[in-house]
Length: 227
Image (cartoon, rainbow, N blue to C red; front, top):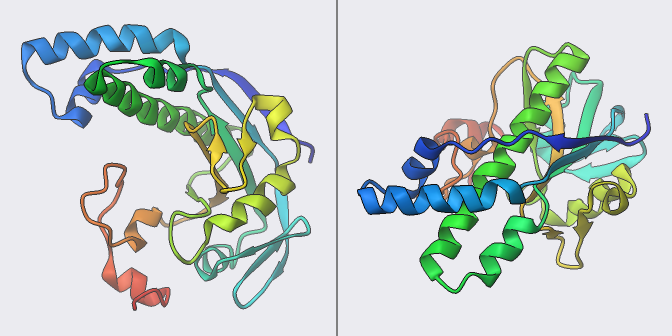
């Protein structure tokens, strides 16, 4: 299947959610955040690109998808009985990023950065619902190169190669460092699953602001990730 794109992904900011993420409670803080939300909202440009791909081969330390090899034992285990996967990139553009960089107030720059993190997560959540509805999937999970040691960030390169010209379609480019520009972009593989899974369950990093699930030492052991 050729590269599919989604433009104008709706991203609606929630004042209460952002305040909770920032840990701000005072009235003056609430007012300041609301003002920055009003600045941020028109700068958000949610877009996504994805392909529907099929499994070619399952290896001991990874998989081959549409002729592209990914090295990850965790990914290999999750795709053991999966035939169809969805490589993707989602972004909110660089408008908010530029505004945050140009901001002379460090606190306001930080708040805008947090708003950007929340916004790109909402854009990905929208893409997830698109996958569920368009392809009749009940359960779905995602993994991204660099999230855990088992799947190194260097696999961003084959992921982008598999997708094709993402830069001209949605404006996301992969740098030599394997990071993306705009920075508020997320890439990875979605795949069907019957058991809810978050890579956070395999990461022991404490106080992670993006954590969606508690670290599960037993699960990490099952995947052979305990040192």
